[in-house]
Image (tube, rainbow, N blue to C red; front, side):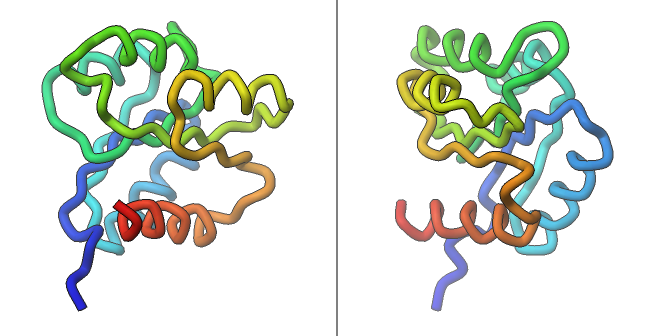
Length: 129
């Protein structure tokens, strides 16, 4: 069986270094190529510079929020097609709805999901492509 996620490029936008490094290491173990951004500005610069198969996006970020990143991506034809999965501690229904209305293909609340579960959801996403 072909490994569908092998070599897929993920942009991980997370300002918490420990979580970001933990996730990066775990995803790379499964064959993903992971680039890290620690804030929304950095994420947008990287998105315009390189091609990614998926963005894992936190909402509460320094400089510009994840929602603002999504709004900017939506209005930029070069990066508007990149799928976004939100990983956040914001679990209010209104936040989830806002994320979905901005085009998120998934919304996961960090406190309710282990790293293993998150990695498995990401693999699922790629196998359903």
